[in-house]
Length: 272
Ligand SMILES: Nc1ncnc2c1ncn2[C@@H]1O[C@H](COP(=O)(O)OP(=O)(O)OP(=O)(O)O)[C@@H](O)[C@H]1O
Image (cartoon, rainbow, N blue to C red; front, top):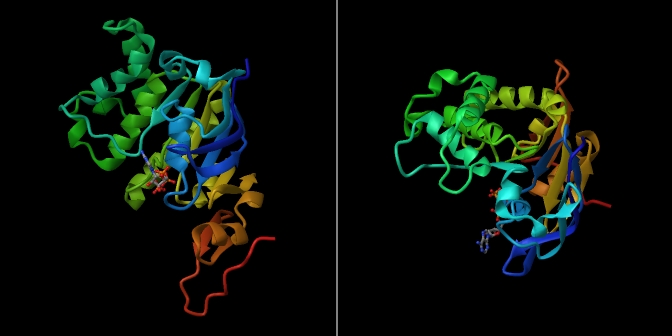
């Protein structure tokens, strides 16, 4: 059965003040949506609103036909998993214990994990090729390993939708590639797993790499939406990030978005 997460004329913000208005998207299981926009435009705020942690300023979020306002926290947690930007547990948990935390969504209050929960944790770690980390101290892992564990935790939650908040933020070049490789592998199994992913990033190249649909936010509104070729043009990226950007094809066939550093940069384009 196809599942869907959609927004209708959604306005997000804090304390009733809107940060971004008119957000309309429809994500079906099997699809990936890449959220882009400058610092502070409201990407995390949008995620927190979808997760029911913040009320919408206006509009609605509809999960499989039901407004999320009508869903309990537990029902929502069985539908949407969240990979936060940063996570530092207060105790020295093992990696497997951190992944097991996701299973709380499926357990009764004070319930103990059973066979099915241990299996879900094993499967999630194995799917990402990190089973060998299971008994290691999570707090002592590298940034890249930690990020993979948080993705494993989301997989172990066994939800149809996963939200990833800048999963490659603050990773070095090599770790970014490792995490992106795993996310790309997940997107290839999304249709068979009946899963949809929303991911935010500051690197527009990732939207092209993942062949994701795009939502580009800027100054209170969405200024680019749809396939990356149409939503992430040089003009739109330049406007969103406030600096001239060109979109180029490499000889190996990749699309890359390149800010212009030359002092003779062209002036900023204006959108029609
Ligand atoms: N609890 C809060 N109360 C009031 N304002 C907040 C709160 N949390 C965040 N903000 C403000 O909302 C704005 C958007 O923040 P948000 O974290 O959603 O942006 P973002 O697009 O995710 O940024 P970044 O790319 O830097 O992660 C910022 O100006 C931030 O200061």
